[in-house]
Length: 242
Image (cartoon, rainbow, N blue to C red; front, side, top):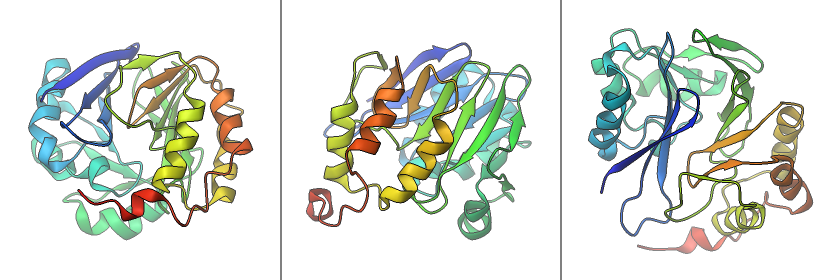
């Protein structure tokens, strides 16, 4: 098992690991800038792999922001280990994430960000898109206007070990996996976040699980509007066992 590293936009790197037999790959993203930033830190058990990949790109001690899209171990399990080696690093989370979950879990107080708030990294500037219940109540997405990249966490995820980047239309597969996993508890909240991201100029959808998606993003937005993926109460994944 090893971490693959792919530059998916200028100075934006996908770090992905596929544990053998896993339902999904586990990705996070490093943004190399004056204030180096990670979006997601990965599982605690995969820290050595992720840290090794980060070290190939920057000095991990210089990390400035660790953006946590929602409180789940594949999003932030390694947070405290990165904080331990990066003295100026600051966790970043939604108001719910900062007040309710990370406040107790994180070894350093989190920075709270609201919808539309911006983080200046140097050349790049990130905009926050709050996305409650997509798929957790503290969820947020991140938009890099400079490189027209939208970091979507678990939204638009695909199963299995996939190539780093694809322009193939995966919208049908995204819908199928949403229904199989039951990861979106509210269709109304899905449509609310679509209202927020549809006006953005997006060339690249940077997913936490599966390939980074390029090409017209509207096919993915349309797929989640035209096919009900929220409110699934009997998803097969709920009953699955190892």
